[in-house]
Amino acid sequence: MRTRSKEFATRLGAHLTRAARGIRWYMTSLMGDSAYATYVAHQARHHPGAPVPTEREFWRQRMDDQDHNPGARCC
Image 1 (spheres, rainbow, N blue to C red):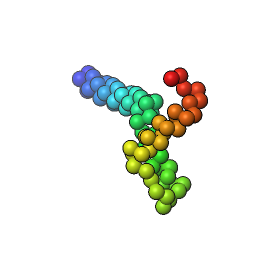
Image 2 (image 1 turned 90 degrees about the horizontal axis):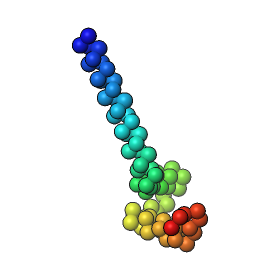
Image 3 (image 1 turned 180 degrees about the vertical axis):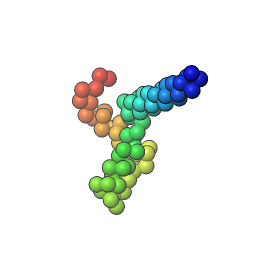
Image 4 (image 1 turned 45 degrees about the vertical axis):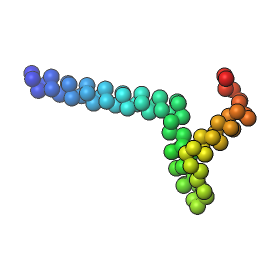
């Protein structure tokens, strides 16, 4: 009986860890935290050798683009 409880606890812990990782991924994706890393990976794959802006330059350009083309943004 004790091993069943231990197995259950191990499985529950694994499921909770997976759920927490999924929530963290969703929140960081929703907030755009991974946007720069995604952009750099895209540039490396599709435009090798092209200059890659610094993270600060990337965010400045992104904010400028959003200000000039608000689209469906609420604010």
